[in-house]
Image 1 (cartoon, rainbow, N blue to C red):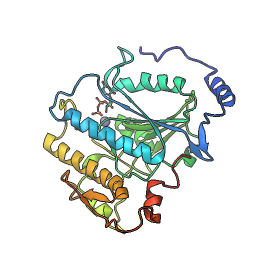
Image 2: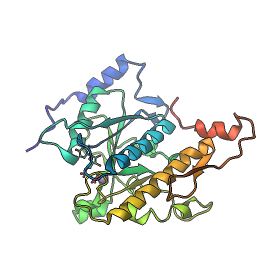
Image 3: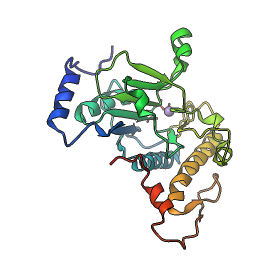
Image 4: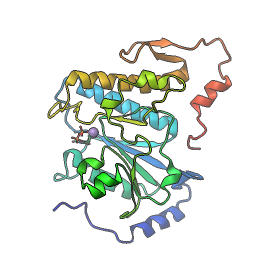
Length: 280
Ligand code: UDP
Ligand code: MN
């Protein structure tokens, strides 16, 4: 049996005391705005497929961009903290260590390395999670009736810094984890004003194995093309704040999309670079 280490039954009380003693590091940075730490990682070894590390770098850049826009912190691990909990299990001892070391963090948001944020301005509805300690993408009937492990996905989940137990929410009201195959060909459509297709917060390349290539359930070229499109789609949302955009979602080439003759600090630009929801 695997264990994450000794249990601290009074953890919540101790964290509450720490927060009272350290008012300069509040767990809520503004009313209704929790302090969020995004956590991701990958193997300490280099990738075995030639462009794997390049993909991981770009997927990491995407997360950094998202965190900067929202004022979230980010921690990326390439260490195996527990020899028995290696590979994808690494996320568990890592999250536990970060919780204990960062009492100021209210929510930790795990993101797999093969996941990209594709709605750069959207955020999880924090207010709706006030009573929940674990938010996992999934469906109640698949998990609690069918008892299917496919009813949830652990590639993107949000966990409160506490001894949680029963307060789990299976989220499916938006794409906390969006399965890539049904999404990557629709980005252009989603971008059109009034499009019926919602932009997914997350596009997750389940089954693609961008780093190892092993046990991939999908054709590598199809996976790569999808990742390229997701990354460019997300990057366009960032670049547009600075007046640039991709020529197409299929290439890395970038063009100037705004004529920069206006005032350098015009209202539109200032609004985008400093969205109202950004942490104070
Ligand atoms: N991971 C890690 N260290 C490792 C292996 C995996 O941090 O040594 C992380 C990485 O972020 C990866 C996630 O664990 O996306 C899930 O791992 P898995 O092997 O299941 O890959 P995936 O399902 O994402 O292809
Ligand atoms: Mn994954």
